[in-house]
Image 1 (cartoon, rainbow, N blue to C red):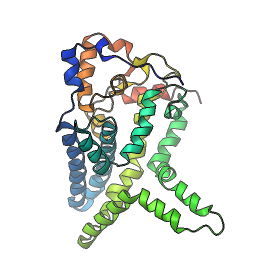
Image 2: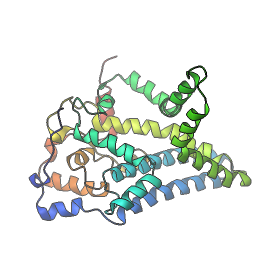
Image 3: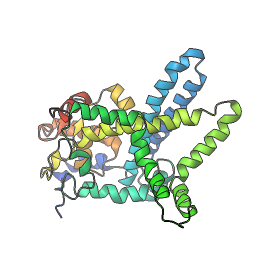
Image 4: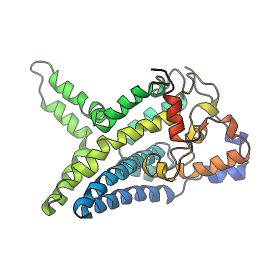
Length: 314
């Protein structure tokens, strides 16, 4: 197997520069996670409190903001997978399992293979970048599937429905349902608790509209855009570790709705995968000051990267 070439931090940083970059804060990761959930709560509150026709503005805006923070929670779970959310591994893993999207251990086992074989034949995420460049029409179709919930249905529910529909004659239904309920227990518990709390106040619609809709529409789309920016049009079996992933410049609006918690610094993340997300901007500035940036794979923005990723002629 072709293991991806690794970067030695000593090649770029003096010990006194590297130590603060690699240091895991006891509070910063937890503060970012609290920020994500507080923003979700505030967006829901504003949408609920908006009077009359203002809801026509407040609800779509809340869906965009909440979907962005749902991605943010997943990004912080990703940091936990790298043991970067908290210096105490037990705390790191508990928070990653119970206060983010969950499934930390399975995700860690999978994701570290992506880093080990980044852009090589054995990279489990290679399928995400391999088709690019594509046509603009193809991207529009993909985005339409995302925003109409078809991507979400395919990834989360269609497999279960097919397994139930195609079970062998005489095969009992309950074991399949039990396994499905257990695997989706966080989703189901969140639904039941939220509806139980809000329904007595006539707000039964909060969970389906302000949690499920962002999760099923905006989140799949921005996850796709993030994946495109990070790895699309990167050469298969790329040998240069500074070109296994792409860093994309993001303005304040992009950071708010599609690239939260420094996820756009993806080249730096692949170069130094144990650096916490909140230290990646500092690593970026140091590398730029040292003249390393021209050797790295970068893009000036998400729109410019989408133009590159959709450069295939129709």
